[in-house]
Image 1 (spheres, rainbow, N blue to C red):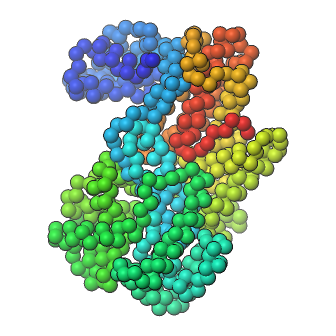
Image 2: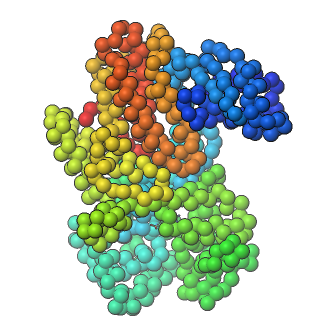
Image 3: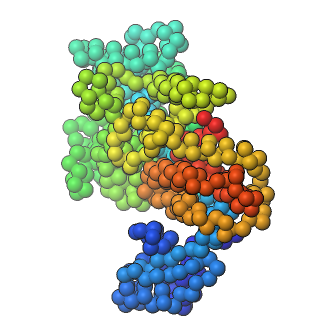
Length: 577
Ligand code: ARG
């Protein structure tokens, strides 16, 4: 099977004559600014620099010397670029064959030896799982799948907030007012009500916070005491409660190592900073000053009462992950409101010249907004009516809405409940991953469930339409049978679909490099729309025999890549809807 890019690269290299390694590295292929100009563009800037010539000159010489072959139809210079055009039949063969055979980049790549740690979801347990955690969960899980697809070893970590003062407050509330039976009945809601009550009572009663601090100290003493047992109990209950949404979102973790995991790993870290002479006393606490990094707020690593903090545990976690996973990148998918926290974390690492510092990347994201019923303005979701949002209930609402739409549009659909679950949950995930991640997400049922909009259901529908054609044609399942004896010229008129499918590889690459799953989501929308236009103008089932077989292969490949792409972002394809 031909790989278009490899073929093009070697042809360019051959045309240019002998290339140094440096020059070879300077051959940068990119999508052309305008598709009418060609299928790929080669920017000649870097090569021109190495050869001490003007970029347009290099581009002209290369285009003039380039001879078309059975894969590449033409090479045209345009300023500092050379635009290449693939022969449509070669494009069809490479794309359709590549997808059906699951060859990389359409299928998963071989292991590259790259190790990526992704810290995501990481809710504070004993507090409700809120919409911000939904974003972290969905973005982090998508990045994990994307990196795995590219052959990396991914360590997905749930850095649960199961230690420190927030947890101590919950523990205090439960110790004072808790009832096991109420907890059993609805753990999430009950813990939330305790959390709210604590907040209210603590306003008038400062002794509550003192009590919580005492409990935390007792917990951190490492002794087997009531606090320890209570911690274990509340942690177990919370984890059980989170499992529901995680399962529905098809999210899993390689490691559930929360803040408590670092209980015995903080002392060596503190010692390192002490030995380096950068841990200084400030009003009884131990801090690292970060002024030279332009950060005014020092990073506190130990409080006056000797207890540790969120930062202390994050430092211990960095050291642990570095030693355990030898990562190339350490990603932290955490809301933009923790920007300072991660700036400080990185600066603290830099302060002692820790070589891990440049690998740490905060992957921030925007808020989820909902339209206020009173003001009509978009507001932070969680503030709606001052109530907490329970993720499970949001997922239920989505599924119920979809169930209603199906009842209307396709009342005879078998396993409608199962399909509604995939579409409803998928719509929320898709909506979350549609725009650049630092943008706020507007949470609006009508727009995210619109079957004709840029939505999950729209893309799932394109897949279902293709499945239906394959079913009606009784198309074979195996790649070999689908591809047997195809005349690729018969797919020359499918160039817009093929070119869009062909973008899959670079798009997934970009999504991984920039931690931007939206690149994949948007490609899926474009593929769906190209498929709809293709099917509007081309018959598959009613075409003559040879054309029908070629088109069926295209349909099967498109269906398959839609499922792969949706799968990467965490949305399931459906065969019927
Ligand atoms: N538990 C924190 C929160 O809910 C997020 C933790 C993110 N991960 C980390 N290593 N700091 O705000």
